[in-house]
Length: 285
Ligand SMILES: Nc1ncnc2c1ncn2[C@@H]1O[C@H](COP(=O)(O)OP(=O)(O)OP(=O)(O)O)[C@@H](O)[C@H]1O
Ligand SMILES: [Mg+2]
Image (tube, rainbow, N blue to C red; front, top):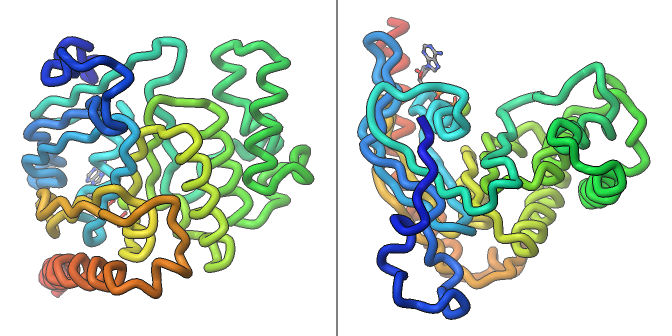
C-alpha cells in the first residue's frame, strides 16, 4: 500500500540543485493524494490530499470523529484505504519508516520501562551496546531513568505516556506519527514534554505528523496545521505557522502574532466542532 517515493520523483524540482544548498524543507517525505476511507456507509476520510516535507512538523486538528486517527493509522500501515495513494520517501533503509504513538496507553504491560523503550531496537537486532546508549539517552530525556526497572502498572498515566515517547524516539524512525500523545498529561508535564519534544525534534529534524485537540499545542509545536472538517473528514485549510524557532511558550504568549494565529485557527475549528456536535445530536435524538 505504501509505495516508497522514488528519489528521482521526490526530487524532480530539485534536480539541478546541489544537496548542500537545499532548504530544510525541500524534500518531500509524504505525499497523500485523494485519500478516502469508508467504513460501510460512513465516510471517515474524504478526498484528503496533502504533501508533507522532510523534517516538517505537521499538525492535524479537527473535531472528534473527523477521521484524524484513521488517517494516521493508514499512514502507519495499520489500516487500509478505500481509494487514493500514499507515497512515503524512505531514504535510509536501515531505519523503520515510522513509529506511532497512539491515543491512550500503548506500552506492553508485561515489560519493564527499559524493555518497552528498547523493544523496536531489539526487534531490529541492533547491537546491545547501542541499545544501552540509545535507550539510556531517551529515558534520561523523558525523566524515566530512575524508573527503568519499573513495570507500567507501577507508573502514573503520564509516565506511561513518556515511555511511549521514549520508545518511539529510541526506535529512530524516518517519520514519527503522534496521536494526541500529551492529552492524558497534567498541564505541567504536558508543557515539559512539549518542550522536550521540540528540543529532540530540533536536534534530529524528523518528519512529525502530530494530532491534537489543543489549538495552543498545535501553534506552539507546528510548522503547518491542517484543519479538518467535521465528518466526512476533508481538509478545510492548511495554515502555516511562521513563528521563529526555537520557541518559548511564555515568550510566544506575549506576542500578538501568536494570539492572532490561535484566534484564526480556533474560529475555523469552532464551526466544525459545532457541526460535529449537531451531527452527534442528530444521531442520538
Ligand atoms: N474500525 C472502524 N470501524 C467502523 N468505524 C470506524 C472504525 N474506525 C473509525 N471509525 C469511525 O470513523 C470515524 C473517524 O474516527 P477517528 O477515530 O479517525 O476519529 P478522530 O478524528 O480520531 O476522533 P477523536 O478526536 O475523537 O480521536 C468515526 O465516526 C469512527 O466511529
Ligand atoms: Mg482519534
